[in-house]
Length: 358
Image (tube, rainbow, N blue to C red; front, side):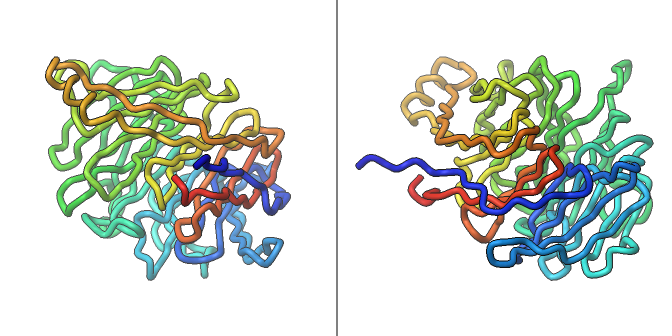
């Protein structure tokens, strides 16, 4: 039987009065938040809700400094607090019902917070609720909002190493209360994997181009695979199930279908082998990862090789905007429902069809 391709359909488009840098669905709801910067340099925090064939603005809050990134992943489902990083290096946690004053705030970095992720909250109940931030100052810091004013861990450049702008961070391997990894990507193409339990650098490599996004396929399982996107029209899928002592993790590299910067990567919550990337020319690209056969993996292991990588299949792509799509998020509850924001000052709600067949 021939499978019909999944289609990427823009369902709703909403114009914004600011430049959007991030979009996140509020867990277990029909709401999403859009974060960004007004032309006067102030921050925007807008909350929208699906309303039939449209979206309605529920609240809008202007902040002193532009907001670059956000996550709900360190909060409980009961609270659903949003953690954000801004251009002044401040980490703040917000109750969306009362966004005038944060429930937690700290000057986390000396310069802009480029990236943020959370763990121990929504979707991952193991381990402490933690937030990781990455900054232009070259450091990665881990925060527990129960600890006031200081990070629980800090990762900086090695002695004698120049500080590199940190562009991407992601939690993974949090399958019990002790284990937790952080992946970080930098402007010079460095990718570093840190083991927080051992407080040690587990692995590193360089992809020769700036790292735009990193995501494990799941946070709450043993490390399985990780996708890393780059500034120069490519992404890498690393198989994290085995690690060769010399050659590291097996990986496959894929040129972007549209030959442009790959801004984001997000795995489908209902199927970890399906993921979406967004492009600098306004496209969305839907991919499927196919694992190597057990026989092939066994042959590679017998040769003491680094392993045989899987393959990546482009399912479909769609032009959805005239400017780069800088932010994308899947709805965790409704399969195929997504939201994405582009630099044309618009946020869109999309639907991806026929995902259940894969």
